[in-house]
Image (cartoon, rainbow, N blue to C red):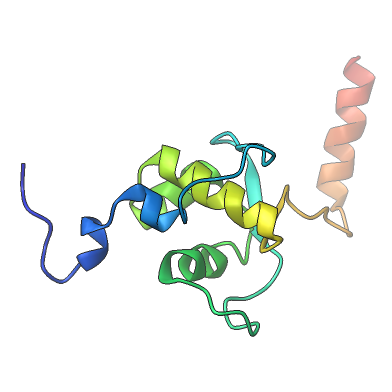
Length: 117
């Protein structure tokens, strides 16, 4: 096992530190395929720890919890807890926003799918 590089002190933190002690029992823990999107930016007045700020910057476009884990290089279980807590706080929304202007190709694909039924 290799030691964490000195330039990355975050690797020495325990997961409960990154998740502020875990998630309350009333907050549903998301699965790895859940899509999340930032509801606010990291600089919207509230002081945010570096991990949460990184999630907010990453999720300006919708990403799955698995993608968040991979891009932040944290265990998937930790990403699920972190993102679930941020959803409970209102910093992240679940699900991708609907496309207000569907393309002709997408509408055609839907029509073909309906005809196949």
